[in-house]
Length: 249
Image 1 (cartoon, helix red, strand yellow):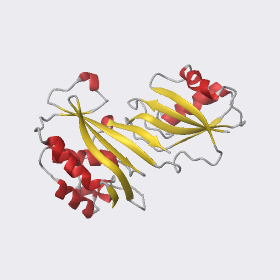
Image 2: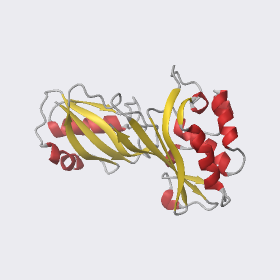
Image 3: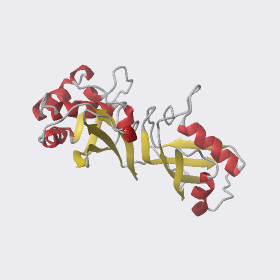
Image 4: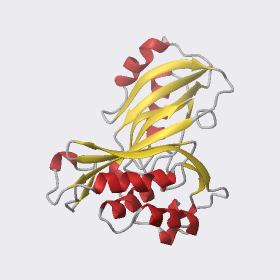
């Protein structure tokens, strides 16, 4: 049998989703917990990779027990996992899916959010939870960000927004929406796409903050897209502000 799990985790103390030989990964912790819970080795496959320090409010992964049996009713599985998982990782939901279901290839789109706190004095309660941006922005900053963000919507070659040295052969992605909104003192960037390149959201966030400061505009972001050159875009924003927000099948 194959089970689809919906997870949430705080990425601060993880080296990312994927197994690492010398790091604490979400995949390893979840795999070990599943084996202990079900009494059999389990294969865990995720919907995507996340970088070290990146969080998830909604991450999808499939669980396949080696013996093909889940001895715990699916509606009870999240509660059972809560007894064997650490406090920074939770299983929120479990359901049966067909054997040919793949959590990565079946995705229609994924939505990320990126949280930015633009103020000169950092907030200790947002440590590792937002990009604490030491600038005071103008009242037009959100309008400037959204004008530039609109340029990114649609099907484009996002080579300029891909980490240098990436080995992805096809950098074309379709962005469903990209916009920012105010949430208290924070700016929250929302971006959804059919797929993401390595560091894509973080580079977009770094570039849009140039627009927030008036150092770039929508026309400049359009030129960055056309350049297909990582050097043309802004900085790679830190991982702490990034959250996988929703996975849609």
